[in-house]
Each structure stands twice: as structure tokens, then as C-alpha cells.
Image (tube, rainbow, N blue to C red; front, side):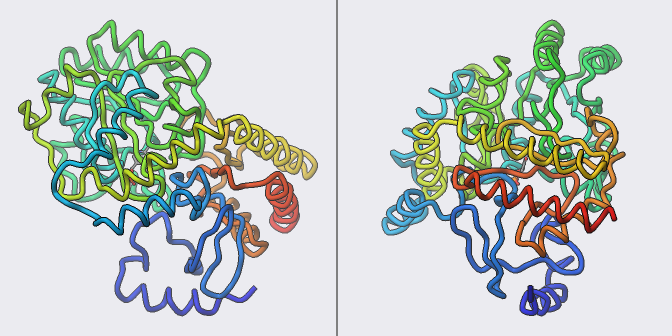
Amino acid sequence: MGSKRSEELYERAKQLLPGGVSSPVRAFQPYPRYIAKGKGSRLYDVDGNEYIDYCMAFGPLILGHAHPEVVKAVREQAENGTLYGAPIEAEVKFAETISRLYPSVEMMRFVSSGTEATMHGIRLARGYTGRKKIIKVEGAFHGAHDAVLVKAGSGATTHSAPNSLGIPEEVTHNTVLVPYNDPAAVEKAIRDNKGEIAAMILEPVIGNAGPILPREGYLQELREITRRNDVLLIFDEVITGFRLSIGGAQRYFKVVPDMTIMGKIAGGGLPIGIFGASKEMMSMISPVGKVYQAGTFSGNPLSLAAGQMTIKELERLGHEDLSRKGELMRAGLRQVFDDAKVPAQVQGLSSMFQVFLSDKPVLDYQGALQADGKKFMELFNSLLEQGVYLPPSQYETNFLSTAHTEKDVERTVDAFAQAVAEVFE
Ligand SMILES: *Cc1c(COP(=O)(O)O)cnc(C)c1O
């Protein structure tokens, strides 16, 4: 497979963009592929290579690339203008849709990214409780702002910067870390910081260290502990929202948080972030309350159009087929690694999956770090050569979309078998 144009573009990019990219997770060696087009489950690069895509833009594209109805909705909105700096009917309708699917989200604000949503959500939690500290789970990722870039997953881990330079100690001092799947650690963190914790924020299923599932009862226990200690529970459902079920992880696991963060799928492939909670809490947001938040691109008409159409289509399709394809994939991959006698953990849920090159099930960040990230990249490169595009890191999640077919899954499992044979023999 030739990729000369990608290689050339990367050389030019490296002169102008740090690491040649606009977001670190996109960089890999020797050079990333420059994408010309996406359609359904497929990506096409500038050299004309075709890939079955499991990165899916790191999660937003649950209907696949360029879904015709979503494209139509965006085009129709664009023809009427892209931004007004004034309210529109679509934001009322979209808020009604979100609140119907997420009853805990009685009120919400639309922003432009998940990063913004967690940043403002945490500010609201602090403003509401009058406390400074937050509890964060190791290896979870909540966007790239100061309070949450402490043992952060995703690109921060892939590129060895889970604790970023440039963040004052005074800020990270207020972020208390706990391992995932460890309720006792949360109890202790609350005890050690008595009266100082505003909220605990977590990804209910970690997606940003690869998929790590909650132990039976973990989320229920967190709900109980935070309620008993008067600490807010924030679910960052930027990945799990609309993916685990139409009502997210909170519906899937039947655990209701105090605040919900959404993004990715909610924007149907366009930029979005949402934070929402009870009417009482959200009434502290400006202009009715004293927690300030604002944004030129907030409630972006194009994002609302794409998001509304995506959710409508997803509701129509349901999640059963997505989950079935996820199970098919996980079963197929387990067979591949078993047959090759290569120790690996195939983890995931519904349309999320990943192979951890580890001999033990991965239950938390430390477990994920023990997986062989270097060997994983060899697998990744072999798959890429075979036309299968994964997110370029052991510490990310692969995503299926409704556009992926059973045949795509079969081809992918075969490509993995070939990759395992190449890398481990
Ligand atoms: C992607 C992600 C974010 C950040 O969203 P952006 O839109 O990239 O700013 C926050 N939280 C989680 C769980 C994410 O996966």
C-alpha cells in the first residue's frame, strides 16, 4: 500500500504544527495517514487507500461517516446561516430531547466541546457547594484543562504527559485522585478532605484508557457514598452518552448522577459539549445565577442539527444490532488471541472494544499501564497496512458504528489474526 502523499504532508505539517497535528492523539510513527474522505464505516486517505475505521473520530460517529440524513440536516441549516448570536428553536427542541432521554438532566447548557463542558460543570459544582476540591479517577480523561489533567488518560498517557507541565500546583492540589473500581478509596478521599470535596467526576465506563468496565455494584456504591457524604456525583458521559444506550450509562446501569457531561455523539460529528443537572443547580448559571459561563459558538446551529438528527436515527435503529456486532467482534478477537496463545484481554461493552496486551484483566489505570503499549503499536501498524484503522494507542477505545457490517467485523478479525501472526512470531 503506498502512502507517499501522507508522508509528504506530514513532513510539511511538522514544520508548522507541533508534532504535525492539531490534537496529539492523531500522531503516530512513522507518519499518520491524511484523510481525504469518510463514508459509512470507511476512511479513504489522500493516497487512495481504504480503511475499515474503528477510530470513528474517537467516538462521535455512531452512525458512521457522512450519514445521508445528518449531511442533509447540516446542509439545510448551513443554507440558512451557521451562527446568529441569538437563540434558535432548535436548541429548545434539542434540550427537550436530551431531557426526555436523560431525566436527571432537567436543565442544560450547550457548549462547543467536552473540555468546555467539564470545565464549566466543575465550576458549577464548586459554585453550588462552595467547596474547592474534586475527586477524579486515575486514567480517566475529561478534556484538556487544568483541573483534570492529573493522571489523565487518552493522548496524555499515550504521549507520556498524564500530568501536564504548565499547570500550577495550587490547581492540581484541589484534584484528589482515586483508582477506578475502588469505592474504599473514595470513602478515604472524602474522609481525608472532610468538608472540602465539591464533587466526584468519572467516566462511568472508562473509555480513555481503553475500555475499563465497572465492577458489579461499583457505580451504585459511588452513588451511595457520595450521597451519604453530600458530595456531588458527576458522570462524564462524553463517550458513554448515547453509546451504551440511548440514555447513556445512567440508564444502562440504572445509577443517577447529580450532573451529566455529554459531547461527541451528541453533536453528530460536529463540535459540542453539554453539561446538565437539576433545575435547582443549573439555575446558578449566568444570567440567572452567579456561576459565569459563556461562548460565541455555544448552541451552534450546525451541531444542534447534526446532533438532533443523529439521536433521532439512533432511537429509530436501537442499540441491539450495535451490541451484537460488538459481541461478535470481542468473541472473534478472543478466539484469535487464544488460538495464537498470546495473552490478551479483549474488553469492552456494547459497541466499545479494545485488546489489552496483558495477562490480567484490566480493572483500572495501573492495570492498563501494564499492557504492552509498544507491541500494541506493532499490531496497529500491521492492521493499518491491511486496511483496518484503529485509534493509534493501547489507551484508547475502538468504536463500532451502525454503518459497520458483520462482514466488516469478519474481515477485521481476519486482519487481527494476520497481525498477531506477524507480530508474535
Ligand atoms: C473526548 C472526551 C472529553 C473531551 O471532549 P472534547 O470535545 O474533545 O473536548 C471529555 N470527556 C471524555 C470522557 C471524553 O472522552
